[in-house]
Image (cartoon, rainbow, N blue to C red):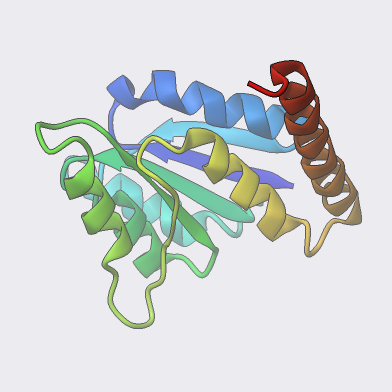
Length: 160
């Protein structure tokens, strides 16, 4: 169970700490790297073409603005790629969202919400839970706990 977390810039890291924390709660091993589709394309290619051999099972790519990282990685790797658009420009992340989600036929990128760091990790866990029964059990428990928390919050909120 190993996930790659790639970011286009170090400035994305504060958001990606949430991704790391979420993966950690499920006991998933991860490696976080700074790889730019535009500024380090050779590094991106090397990473993507060797990701499977290096034991990764899912790749999360976070990028803002032009946000081509997920698409480049998806074009080079057979592994599932999750795009995490980052709010990093005057366009409030819409540019990154569209760049991430608008992929050509044959090169899908599963895309979560703008700044959806936790959901990127949750989706990675759900994808891997097809192979790892312990992750499926943990995901079911996670959802049960989430439901319980909402029900409890509703009771505390009362009839207003």
